[in-house]
Length: 278
Image (cartoon, rainbow, N blue to C red; front, side, top):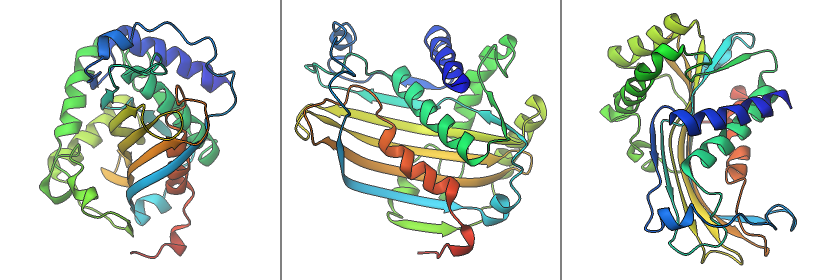
């Protein structure tokens, strides 16, 4: 519960300082939608029931980095570096939907799972005024761009979905040698903020669709990563894409990250001795 209130405070910080990374409320109805009257019935009509369709995924673990996880180390928790939140112009249940709301909801899911997986690990929020000194506010924005544009798999940017879309359905144990520039960036973060690990939702793209299911739905697309910053290594990465359609009359006006929760937990809970590359 303490962590939940901590993230509630983070949400307020995000709204006030704009946080790190890109917040794109891309939609033809972004202005009208954000001014909708709050829904008095939201959260009072039962659970949101979703059916997942059109799922695509890629998952990779670095068995060497994963096996030496120090569960008592310090983890630096980043907000999503880039968020694109899209919604139709006319949407009665989109009043609470925004880039910051998505980031907060994803953080809620992350926090719950990380505490479950590594209960002794100290988690520090990588935001100005928290783990980051207020004086580093401008550095945070440049850091976000550096991370997004860092060369990673296949010589492409870390923010590029292409390598994972081409490997749809693949799960594998792989140890990637990072480009020296990227590795040095991770090492510098570890030293500067006294961190061992970094959890970084790299890109998050969500589009609301009123025509899906019985009461609307959304498409979800993300790259989520965890790094051993001290060694300059990827611990694991998950690319997740799916469509969530309602099967009940309760609209998806909150908890958009809930379907992703089970997919992220698979990364944290995997017994790598039983992983068969395929």
